[in-house]
Image (cartoon, rainbow, N blue to C red; front, side):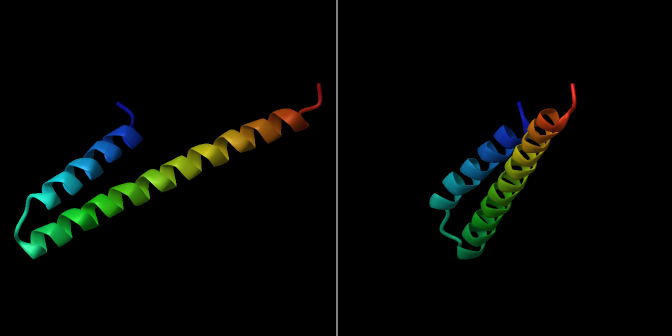
Length: 64
């Protein structure tokens, strides 16, 4: 399982748990955790896209 998949599963699970909670503080913490996971997903996705673009650019500029 990739790190992104793991983070997606954690975020989804935290959001599902929050729906069944009554305690406001627990709900807040679960949703904050889910938000942090989704922010990490965005960062990892952006980094992967940047690396791919860099490789493509490098390949296009390489003299053959």
